[in-house]
Image 1: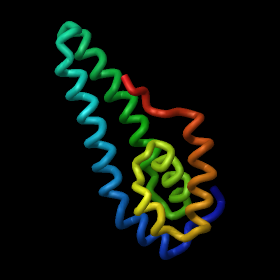
Image 2 (image 1 turned 90 degrees about the vertical axis):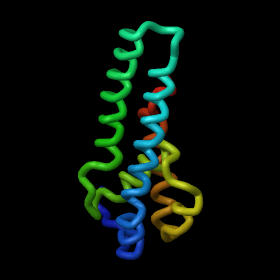
Image 3 (image 1 turned 135 degrees about the vertical axis):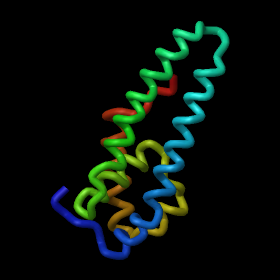
Image 4 (image 1 turned 180 degrees about the vertical axis):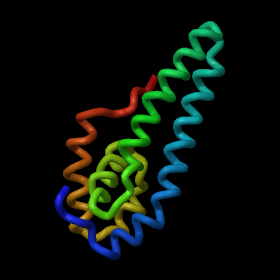
Amino acid sequence: MGKDIRESDWKFFREIHPAVLARFCDRILSEVTRLANDSSTSSHERYLLIFDLIQQRNADIATAFDDFRRSTAIRQLAIMHSRELLSNEELARFSSETQDSVKSLSEIYGTIKKPDPQ
C-alpha cells in the first residue's frame, strides 16, 4: 500500500488478528459441516465439494491473514471487512483515517472476490 498504519491502530490490529482468524475458521468449519451433512448428495460428491471449499478458503485465509506486517495491515483489514469478518465495534476502535481507508478499499475487495456461499 505504501502507507503504514498508525501505531495505535497497529497495536489493536495485532490484538484482534487471532480472534478474527478464529472467526473465519469457525465460519469455514460450519460450511464444511453443512456440506458433510447434506444427505442429498453422495459421499463422494460431498467429499469433492468439501475438498474444493477447503482449497478456496485456504486461498481466502492466505489473502486476508498471511504476510502479517504493518505495511499490509490496511489491505488485510479491508479484505477482512469485505468478508464481514470485522464487527462494527472492532472497526470503530480504529482511527477515523484507518476506518475510511478500510471502508473504501473493502468496496473494491468486495467486488473482486467474495467467498462462494456454496
